[in-house]
Image 1 (cartoon, rainbow, N blue to C red):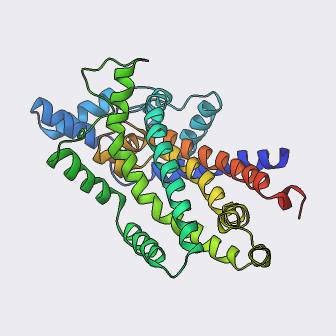
Image 2 (cartoon, rainbow, N blue to C red):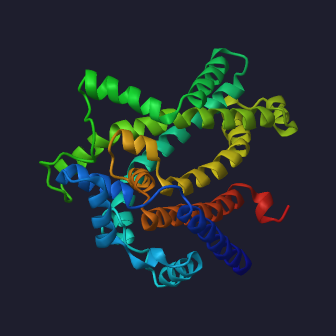
Image 3 (tube, rainbow, N blue to C red):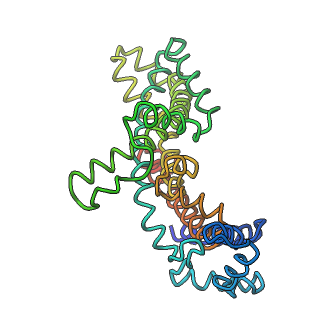
Length: 327
């Protein structure tokens, strides 16, 4: 365990270093977007706005050599300081703390629903293969794999929010609702989360179907399954206890990774719905070249994936006794 912890910390350091170098070598001037906004809002020439912005937010640290900026960043990082957002003029840690709950809410619900529905359908399709459900699973998976997630989000938005007006267009809750632990606020939050959650669910189901179907098909061909059938056991018991328990190992490992990567948010989906999660701020940071915010969000994603790998190994050992026994 100690060795794995050290390897994980080293991985985080390497990923942080690579991210720092890549972010600081992105093309474009970080002050240009801010200057364009100032010029548009105050109706002044762009050149004057650019000089003003450089004077106000020049941040002398950005004029230092890259290696000095890197060591300053790492030293602050060890103190728990992720820096200040150049775009929002707020500590990055506060932005993450405010955005993370919204991303976790919709993604946990979306991933859980897509995993549950997808694995169940995939197992049934494998058990009754060469039927209409098998064809449906393959067709649905092909369509969702070929469809960008933002396109699915736009379709749901146009149909259910614009045309039918059943669901809200944007935001995490209505402006006239007071945040707090009360029924009205909770119901309003869930109401606004329906479309993002539905997008995650529809986009993710196809992948879980194929993973479960592939594993279940190979499991059905095993000798112990044939022996159970020869003993006359009920199909339901064989499907659940013999096929499902063994075929679920790979999907569960992938599920743990999915929960880890969700900390990075889904930039395009949250941007379509103007949902104030991690993905939305990722998009804004990339668009505005907000170095500090980008680095903080990339670090969050890296840590999430590493923790997810630990969880995946633990779950795999719990589900497969052979792993616990060292077999």
